[in-house]
Image (cartoon, rainbow, N blue to C red; front, side, top):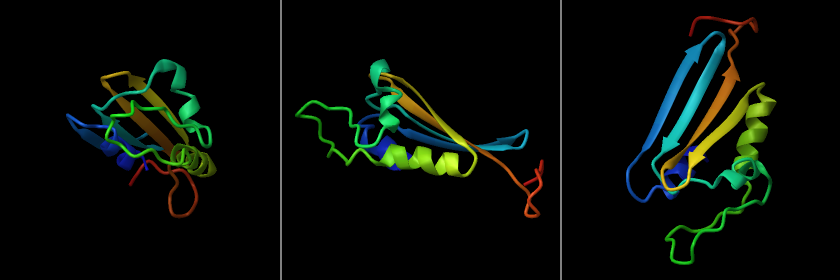
Length: 111
């Protein structure tokens, strides 16, 4: 969903996907150079059925408003969290952080 949204709302520029690990956490970051999200909408984008209205001539089909709430729910169910940063007209970055566990269930600093 994060990658699909990034591609959908980036008419020029690009999308970057980064995966990293440190201190027992794995981090997924999806950044784009798209239309961005107004500050007053940043926390609302995780609410079920919330959609940021785009101009009528914007060539993107509106979704159901469920995708980001599902992303947040899944991240939290796995002991993680999701965070968004954005600047209107400059792009958006979603960061999902997960606690890493070894195959035996104890925290791992490897793999």
